[in-house]
Length: 527
Ligand SMILES: [Zn+2]
Image 1 (tube, protein in one colour):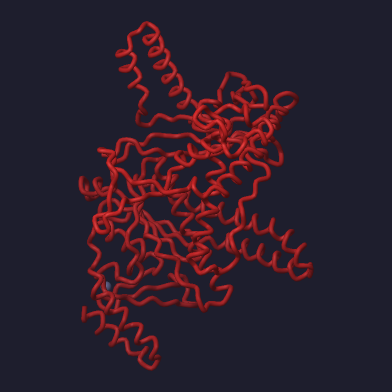
Image 2 (tube, rainbow, N blue to C red):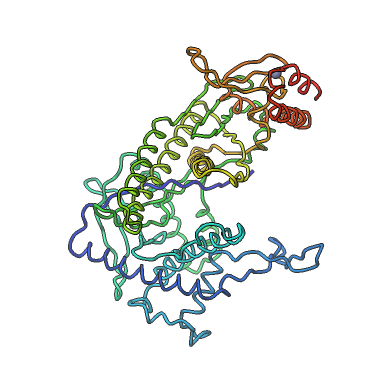
């Protein structure tokens, strides 16, 4: 039993046009934050030693682990906190390090900045440099194909306000963001009016209860400590451990949008869930939803009650695809019209960014519909197909390669969104091996045929037919049906399927035999 998985959900609270002193404080904080992030980005890029691996240790005994084969110490990548400690050691003056090699004094207002402010900046810098390093490593691994990943650019940055230093407070007439801001000389608290989005009201109420409970526990513990009753205080503090289903506001990020400021508030919920496999064993007929993510953003889901289908969901994304094609056409046209590559590239960059944003939005919408569907059917688990490695695109034309890459990315995005949204509802996401999910007959498990029907009225366009048992049905649904078998562990053995696939491939290369359905049947029967 895993008692506390944590789910997060971020909600945007627009601030009511902070003016005067409050706006100034926000501006100052941001103006001080960005250079501090930039400073640490340059330190983290230059000092390779900050990223040195550390020996792996046993969780319980804390002893260093050795590789049984080579006898060498096992190493792991440092955590963000470990990198942060190292970065502070080379930049912050302490008794242990009186002359750090990098001087924070070169950054305005940074030397005296509160520790939490500095750490927020370092963490942001670590995130940027880490993703740069992994992009660079991937580029090297792929034989330096394509453009070299650019250096992280630091211009203006949303400010992270650490947990406990900022939170949303509801009051009868108005609601506020209570926040501590750093202006270079002073660390002051402000109350900035916010607009409460409708979907946030319920979360806020629960989060306030959580907060009140935590504060009550803390004040009791403190008063016991003041009275010298240490042991009792310790016992009281134990109640601070997260409860199931409580909701807390985590570190807020302050964004400057085009039309003003906004606070992005992640709400954290502790979800009591046990491992999917344990749930399945304990209750084999547990309601699940299986989802097949096809190409072209097509998602097909089936909700199961025991062995029966309780509902299906088809998401085709055709409208999105049309929008995307229009956007792409606009970019192409501009590129041709401008003639000047530099100017064209720059103005098109914004269009590309918007295009990507639209894709992310689509993935989010598809994910939301999948999760709502699973929730409506009472599913405890959502079963996906594991994403196989990005297929090789060598030898493909530009358009096909782009389409393949895009659909691959899109599936990854949808999967991530679903995992994140589902956990909030206490629904787990698991993945199953993708082999033959869309190729095996959902009834008898033989290797089947897929074909497209055109102009034959209202039936499904993509059809699946089993040469062995004769099952015929919507090809798009086959994946979702077979994923249920993979979840139940009743999917047919792969050996015969592989043999049948090989046989089918042979047939494809010899078109004269394609008409001979008997051969396919034989191959499928052979297994
Ligand atoms: Zn069959």
